[in-house]
Image (cartoon, rainbow, N blue to C red; front, side, top):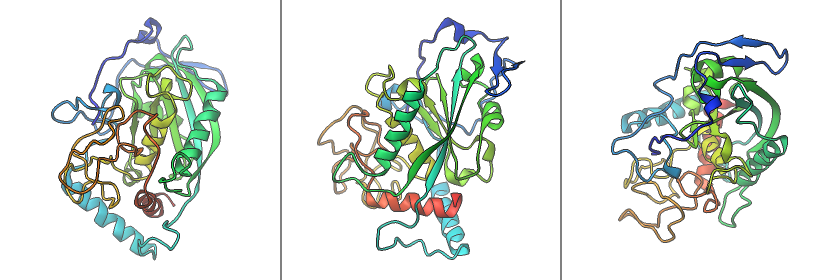
Length: 315
């Protein structure tokens, strides 16, 4: 998983006691306490520090133990049965697909740092549609999911810009229901952090993904500025694990057509084979930690899993 690092920030982003919220409609400023209210379940740093983490950034999902992984699969099967669904892919290779409304929340600091342009936002939506349609490789699956921009709001709040008070700001700004993808653009020590669909019922107010704003198309995040961090994090939001989940095991990421992988990749290490099980490491898969330029596919079984999870938890 991604290891935690410290990223330089503009001095203005360090204003601690006087962070202001500028609401997108009223324009009224409201004082916010300078208290970090991160939920302990938001993210974790795994044993060993994750030196090979994508971009050297921190872990982007909460930890899922083997026992919990099994429980999630059992719970998913129960939900599908209750909805009258077998969980077996259709002839087209998918169970369900949907048009996903996307709400973008731009978290600037008190001086407006951290802003992105409307063009970058449009380009980010285009990247999501391109990657989920399987248009970056002839080997890629068309997942059937499409993404439509439903709204953009911009806040001026130095604490929120740094992803502090994260549970609070998400609950205050999140829009839409369980089918809506909320993307908060922040400046933090990660490329992105995502919630899983099976956690929505327990914590609906924080559901969504947080993305380093410099990773949007045209941003300054070297090797990670093609917009595919959002693709990766949305994959978690739709129920995918990392390709290296579980390491060199037959279960690993619960997806049969992603070869087992002992650890995350870095860069684009062609020919990497970190397990004795069949297949080279899936370095081109959006759920590894490769460079954006190395990414080009979801697999058919990942597509089916996303559809299964959508049916169980988000439909």
